[in-house]
Image (cartoon, rainbow, N blue to C red):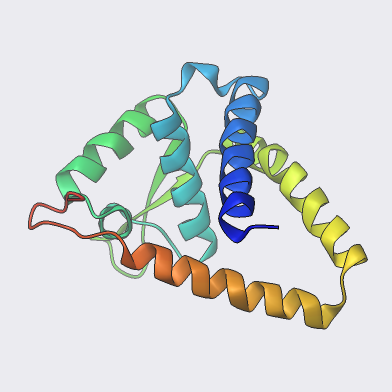
Length: 153
């Protein structure tokens, strides 16, 4: 089995699965870009909080560009803004309950696949796989260069 073929197949399957799930959950009226923003906001929300600034930094875009997209998602009811109780200048972003449920449904095939792998492989094999995947991901992300405006070049 060739590593590149397996990675390409996995990426292809994930992309097609994303699009199928997007249509299945009624998100067909959303752009793929909007769905990815919602996914990033949801992930950062679980990691301690998402703001327009952290979103912009993660996506390597300008803060005004992130704010514009966030405001669009807020207007459609998909994202909720909440002012921090500790620092009133900070506004946290969360996905709406409807989006949170859709993302849980969206992740069910992923969870099912993870459970199947856990049954098929030993804990040590999975640890090695995770180490390889982390190394691959870190190296993959090094491949992106960003210009001064935050755009990928």
